[in-house]
Image 1 (tube, protein in one colour):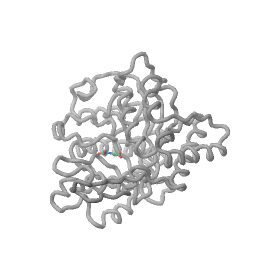
Image 2 (cartoon, rainbow, N blue to C red; image 1 turned 90 degrees about the vertical axis):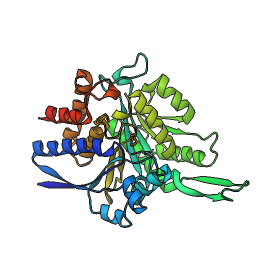
Image 3 (cartoon, helix red, strand yellow; image 1 turned 90 degrees about the horizontal axis):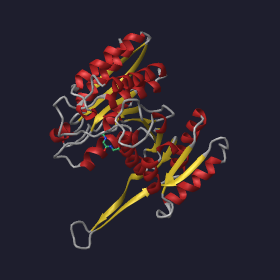
Image 4 (tube, protein in one colour; image 1 turned 180 degrees about the vertical axis):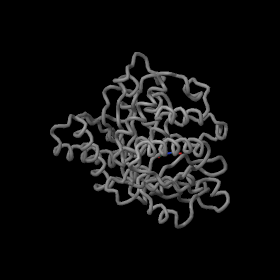
Length: 353
Ligand code: GGG
């Protein structure tokens, strides 16, 4: 029997509610399969922990997480804790410490999902974003001079190393080659005259190794417009940390909402644990009310199953999400239904059965 050891960080707001459903679904998958099982260990880290201890996780948190095969994360952020603390001291520190340099975010319109775009079919929205996940605009490099004085100055650096830029672009080329898809690079070389000119140069360099992959290059402003006006242009997409974060929220909107958007933070070499999460935030306004949509978490559970080589089960979960969207019987209010978070999780389990 294979045992997958998973660290569960449910986090804040709706995190615990949606993660409970994700864990339930993964346990059911393992039970039905019989050849593997999950061993979940829960960590109470996040903003409540911060309010008690002054830290988002203990000093040895990263050491503790190293022993796991993967991390299943809910959401981070809570009123009363500055957002840059809650994000940096938990989510971003995990991504960086474990060199999770690939953030895979599918943007896929399933049948039945409420797409706000006109005359768009399922086949028209089928992309995978490969977001650079450890450096770029989120490198955390900069300075704050003359704080709180009239001559105050802040500098936020975008850090693009050759290694960091090349490896994410190469990963995206490999994915496009494997799937027989086009690859689009999104950058902003006309304005960001160092970082994005460099990004475009590396993209061109790496493309020479993949003559079979058809490529496109868009400025981020044009790409945002095309994602709305002509989303079928995009198949595999590679972009920087900040652009990827912003564009995948736009992607979530066109695929039916944040309640359907999932992300995998991968350390492709598997030297460290990878992390799987719904990409939405903690939504404190609806937390604890049973209103949160757990399907993004189920989708991230599907990515976790893919990562461990259980692709048949990963696909099954996506098929179930699609079936539920088409039937419209058991959906949360964000998708026009009146079911609770738990009822949606139970419906996924019932369909697995
Ligand atoms: N589901 C994790 C979460 O709460 N994410 C909120 C967020 O702001 N993420 C930023 C990022 O993915 O870089």
